[in-house]
Length: 147
Image (cartoon, rainbow, N blue to C red; front, side, top):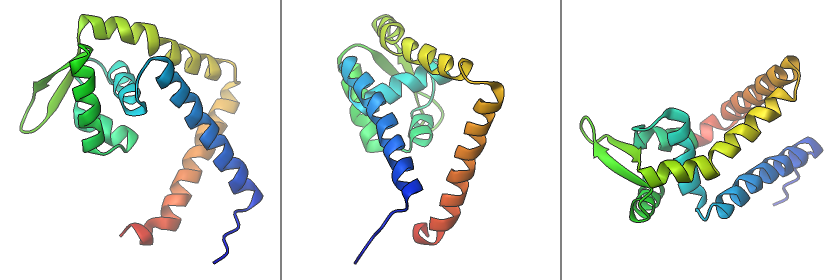
């Protein structure tokens, strides 16, 4: 077997991995696993009381991974769970969790928002449009393998 990615694919993969690496370093700086970082990020994004399943869907992370991270964050006193309808579980930050999120997650949102403010409106829209197009085309091209 011989696999040869094209130049564009190599560059795209490198950029994707570099971006993922930045978020990984941010998680480590906060003393968190990547999934715990994503959980706190989602709570900050969706609001206190967001659903556990929303985090799984937003970041395509398995329920088992999210459950493990939630238990870890609970044991650290950062969040609590409340039962919703059926099997839904709502995530709530504790006072310590709110302080932790202000210290480690809020600056990430600020940096991400600054990135878009440093782009022209056209650049930002082009980035979003082309990223969505890549995602849609990729999905279409691998759809048979996912069935």
